[in-house]
Figure 1: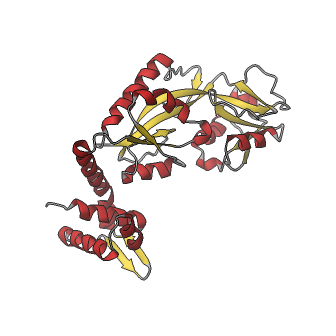
Figure 2: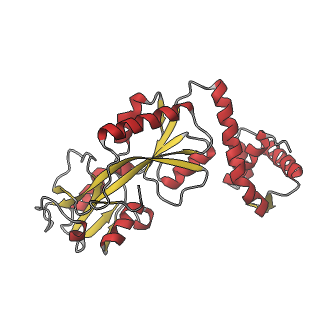
Length: 306
């Protein structure tokens, strides 16, 4: 059975939007043209992919089974065309975890990876969807399970994490702290804890029961909230530069064990932009020279194996 990529692309966009009007607009088609492509695809497959009702569109069981292979088909077709006609296109890389400054690591490898175009992802789920749609070629941030089966990832950097405390905190004068020392303190988080995998796992592992969530309005605002209460603390990768106007805070290394924040590169399986090989090679070279991937189980802590 020969399938038409244009029809599959129409199906994928409609399945993601669950709205034929928005899907048609995204593909620069009329809604009638989109509906015809999907109808022809359904006729060829011999099954309905969508259930249409008054104001609603849902996937059938067959449609749900067809969606992931269809996404991979569209991505592979785009990659095949790009390999021949678009070899100069920049590698589109998005990031998430902005509070922890992922651009620091990308900046160290970017000049060796060719031309990059950077996006502004919000979190892992939104970046995952951008990868699956083919809107970006790669993404950089902290990856944690479950990852979508159509994505591959490579560990790039393990970064030691420090505690950031108000100067009035009872432990602020220490030269180093064990994570267990923070059990009577209140962890201040930049959003709901159940959406912050690393911090959530840290609190569970080290018995941190005092937890309060703020709003992520940027690092300076977040740290000002931490400084406002001497019971609070937060965690930041050791190399994150604090804003110049940060006052009333002290950074203290964590030891026995040292938590490590894992940065990874993600991409779609079976769809490699030519620049991705250069980017992964640059990351690997810097990991060797900068000792980015050092990990000693007796000394360090990771939420999952590196």
